[in-house]
Length: 147
Image (cartoon, rainbow, N blue to C red):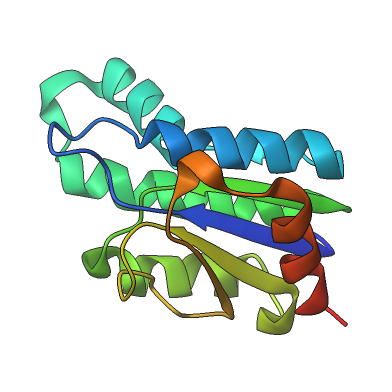
């Protein structure tokens, strides 16, 4: 597994689209920390384009989550996962982390949304308002969890 994995998680919008503020935080962390940003939604979209309507959406979602987490297992440094994991994804995320060989103390979830929505499989840093987040303070808070 990557030395450090940061899962930037948050709810999708009511239309099912990605949460733009969460995605911006994931991209900013990737730039600040020099880490690749992996997005299960992009993997799911590519799989759906390849399979069309013959593969179940839930199956493609689970496969994309596991694929991204296994890919994170191949990264030697740090990695950011830009996710919109839901409570129903908990078992798939646990399985993906295990497949990646993740020592959970090296993984942190940054929850971008209302309190109480995080999967909480790992330590959690909550970001209540993505529009006003102080990125330096966020990086320091995340770093403190790895000491």
